[in-house]
Image (cartoon, rainbow, N blue to C red; front, side):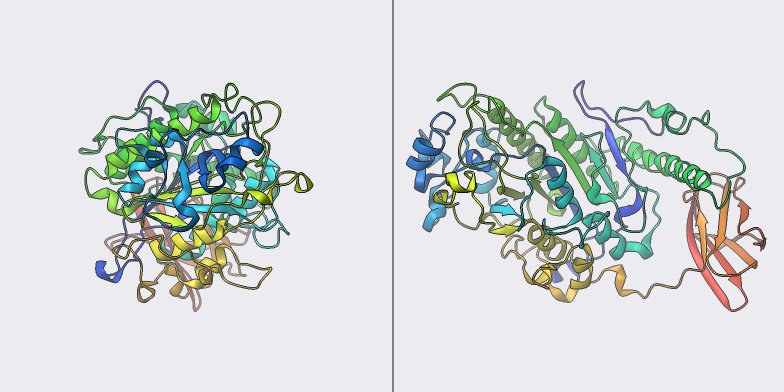
Length: 550
């Protein structure tokens, strides 16, 4: 298998999309009972692409007659066996009458219902954001950038997850493995795009991996010896070279993890695309790769028509999608819980918006505002956050929308950032901040999402941003590097000394750099692959950088 070869587990498996080092290195955060070390913790995001219909996913049975008789006479979900479908028969209040779509019982272990009964799934009711945008493109961009729909001031052109990781783990970069991996979509998610570290997200799905560099750059697979400096052409060319270098390095780490002894899946999975994606995730985790964030995608939730195939018949697009989702997650959870890796993994579902409360004329539903989220995993405290939606909110005057947001999506992610990953307030605020109310989302966390056994106490909040960042005087690129390392002075240092050491501190190479032309080059060709530190010195100014030789 080539270094950038795709991993396919069956004929229908999706190719891997790579997300290089915008996501930071090993976490050293934890619950005090675990001595503040949860370096193996990982998040798995499942995107329900297209806008999932929350009202037919979780049925508010306390107002079932209005739901089935007035709002959805043709596409409502029948509840023939309430005791089997109800989310939590022991709960009190309106949540007692929250009912799973029967498709969510799909799986050898009863799917989402089985996870709930095992105390490993939490339902988050009515998730959205303050000023909903019902355009697919705008809404998913709002979710990705951490905005509230009122303005772009918070996120602008970068993603909240990229900002979070960039701030938290900048002193730990670079790494020689991908710290984020996306599967199942040829489009790179904007959420991973960091504020300063642009161009680190790479998705090679659909490419010939062996010739990816050639396809991308048109340079016959070989970078030129001289990169024009100070030109748009030169900067774009350097970006391509950096991207190619990172792709090779990270793909090698993926291949090693996938083929590692003991990395095999421990259960059988359904023969579906989402199951193949999650099967790959489980195998990579078990193979020992240190990737921290995975994202998988299941599309088709834009159910404007044939959401149900006929009046009174729930078979149709939505049932098929929820069946695939439940079966894939059921198998994934059984797989990672077959050994200890399940103690370090939390998964969650999200979608750009929900659907209208009232059906349309095509046995479907149109764009809405809110939808439930599911958070699952052994570290998750099972239960329900929030109450059943108020169906009387949806009227002809508001275009049949249920508008009350019980949980801002940023509350959900901030809760996991802090209670599962141990981020301090300043790091959460760098990812997103409630500008409207001038309030931190660390003050708006959702209670009881993480079990006490896995909850990160505030005494353990410790991310790399606590370490003062040194001022940058030189830029060194590409990183990883194959042959020529370019060094640009950020300040007016023309005569610079450098020294290269390996990870054991042994001196490898040193010399002088003349920056009269605005840059200098260090030939790295003869160095073996691996990690190195390069120290630059000019007068009293000194700076050390970590470099990967690919």
